[in-house]
Length: 106
Image (cartoon, rainbow, N blue to C red; front, side):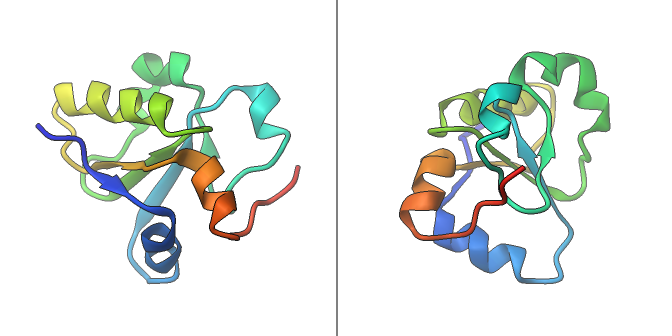
């Protein structure tokens, strides 16, 4: 299955809809304290195999990290496990910030 991706502007628009979307940040704790997308849940990439049962199979699930590489790995892993609803944020939180979109500080 080909990796599904979304860009920052598309995600910002999608988050303003009433659609049921799950946003998951796969960065580690040291990165999270620098800021996160609003409404994102934190699930470090290394814990994904242990927590994949908690990832919904029927709703859109959008993963992001710093640059998009680790979140692409998360999507590929879940695709291989039968999830076809996972989407990678292209360029990660870096691209989100470059587009002037809001980041929540902790």
